[in-house]
Length: 252
Image (cartoon, rainbow, N blue to C red):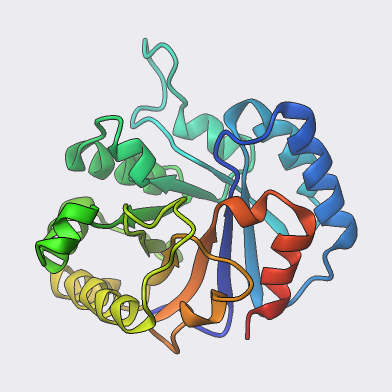
């Protein structure tokens, strides 16, 4: 797998900030955050603010990411966002399969096509997988995770130097303020690792696994588990300078 010495932290701003708020937050983060060579920090603003935020963080230690993408570079697809355009704007990472997208009807086939498009345009797909509360209660988590990972990685071939990220994001936890127990996360992360490597042993050194779901400064280190889970996606707590920097400074 990837070099685990550098932890990955992704700030998903969702649709929580307007354009000016996004600009202001990016500027404050660049001014106030003392960079840590052990962290790769990615900011994912809304699409309308993507270029402006990208310009602000361009010469900083923050990387630019996108919250979603379409699976064609160009065409008559009103309202969609081209992966080629994201790459042109300087995006290095793209979230795909987030639970809030799946709730809107995004299928496993859609996610797989998006992963292929992201890789084609030389960006890093951050593939979100996770179970609903009903699936969790019915002890179907393992099956759901295996199915989602298997489909997302179908026919994915990485070129030399490319990588991908798999993010365990239990649907019932996202935005709830409650977090999953450490031992549950560790178990699911192992399932994700073994599934991906079974699909393609050559992926073993080309991907990493992270966790997303109600992450804050108090619990962040519960989800960074040795060489298993090496980063987090942060939602609500990434929307304020102090709370996000607190998380970055807490990571061990």
